[in-house]
Every structure is written in structure tokens, then in C-alpha cells.
Length: 206
Image (cartoon, rainbow, N blue to C red; front, side, top):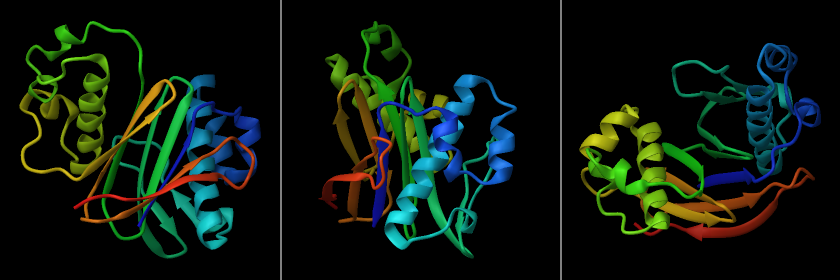
């Protein structure tokens, strides 16, 4: 089971403060305005999902501070899988108690994608902008899922069958890479008012 929550318009850090621990809030004060919004909104999304799932308190949810490693999530004493992504005004978070995941969201905007395809095997078969963003978000999500550097994934492509699901959103492309066949994905849109509204329960094909 995977829970995926997204917000297309990030809130101010102050609006997210109640979802943060004291340590996280103090850390947010050291960041630039842009980074603070990303940091606070990401943690708010994760904690709102977990509260919705199992009524977990803020201080019972430990999310590692940003580093060069993937974020870790501990709920009580149990390790959960976590992946976060942001682009422009949007932010997304995916969590799972039993399967590895990787997530990416990208704002769709006009760009000369044909130039980016040169030397990047993972982007070679994109005839249009929408397909390009599908391939780009897949590469980013797979990089997080596998722990392989993004540049290497772009250059060498993705070998084998990768379980993934794309979610076209207004102005954005969202991609989730997951571990298991026939997994259930609960997709929620968060407008800042609890609880998040569940858009769909999806059974990803094997």
C-alpha cells in the first residue's frame, strides 16, 4: 500500500508550523524563504497523511533533516519508506510501510527538449513535450528509488521493467516508481484544509 499526497500551491511556513516539531521549525528559520516553504510543506504533507491513516501524533513521526542522503521516516519505532519532490509551487510526498518507492513531480513548461535528448538515453523516445516529461519524471523517480545518480540514469537509460505510474496533474507531471506488483496507491490532493481529499484509489498493474 502506498499513500501519495500532493499540493499544487504550497502554503507559507507559518501555516505549516503546527505539523512540525520544534527542532524542524528552528531548522526552517535558517533556510531561505523558498527552501523553508519546501521543507515545511513536505513535512506537513507527510504528517497529515499519517494522521489520516493511523492518528499518529506529530512528535511520534521522525523525518530526517535534509542531507545528501535520501530522507528517512520513523513512525513510532517502525521504519517507513518515504520520497519527496517539489517543483515551482507544487510539492508531493509518498509513503509506504512495506515497499520501496521513488517520486518526482515537474512543472510542465515549454522547452527545447530535443537538445536535452542528445546524450541522454532515457529521453531518446520522446516525440512531444508531454512524453518528454513522462520520461524525465521517470528518470528522476527511478534515481531516488534505486539510489543511482540522476546523470547516470539519464545517460544510460533504465534497464529492465520498472514498475511505475504517471499522474498528469494541472500544469505538472507526477511519477511514482514502486517495488511490488499489483500495489494499491491512494492518491490525495491537499488544499491545506484537513483532511486531504482522496482523488482515487488505484491498483497499479504488475
